[in-house]
Image (cartoon, rainbow, N blue to C red; front, side, top):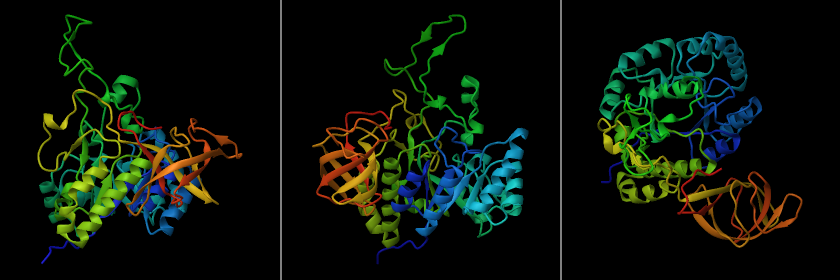
Length: 420
């Protein structure tokens, strides 16, 4: 008899804009986490205005998905009055959960958002079951595990906490060099506080060693002529280990990436959705499809893959020493907003030309090659190419196979920079 797994974990996906939220929901997310324009640890992300948040929550709920809002800064005194106003706004919007790290912010959220679940952020350093029990007694519905935990430790925590306290863990995305993401490098080098939402990602910078009595003389500690990136971790990827994560008692699988494009979110969401659903059908189906999951997940930007802390302490094999660039196989061109007659309407994100062969990426898992027959701007003027980012374009494709929310992408194996 084919073994089956009956527990269905939540697939929780990041979004930095209304466009990306809709992409995540359509491509298979059970829940989406977003940041408002204040109190989020991704201040450089676009984040959501009040109106966009309202529309995004409504869209998600209409499609059976939830929305979690981050308010996980480590607050200072000067933040508290504004936080009260922010939580009052959130109470009117009714997201499904708030993600909080700071006990002061937790206190305000409990007071002003009485009907909204509170989840404890990984920033709170949640590494033992007594910490989980503490937050449960305060009224938390879920705790996000510290990234430094192994699956064995998570299983032990699950065995010691109340059944109705949920555990959320990262399953995919960038890893942080600092303990539970609490970094001081950004503040030290640039004055921008990572714990206040302004991280400049100095862990991705190029470093060298200099002896104090020989200023200006950089010692040769690098791997090649480009330098050494001693803090630059590989990305987490647990798509081949989902049964182990379920067995550990994890309730929600969290994908990292609130500064990523719609193409990244669509690719990762669709692939994990398929893997989870295959596993729920049978372990055999999941095991037989592992190679295809890895091929698909590698089509979005990544820095090579690691399993993080889940099986052992990270070693030198989990770091990338010779560069800080992403591997990227596809370029994001745009998402289909609407269709009219024989054309699709997109907001263009990277250059493409009439006559190009591009790919339509669909939520059902299919990818269809199409030819760009013609391009017009919003005034109907014919164009040979689309060089300007965020321009509204009316594009005729052959064959005409697009639906609203489909993603347009093009294969570009020789370029490794991030898309617009």
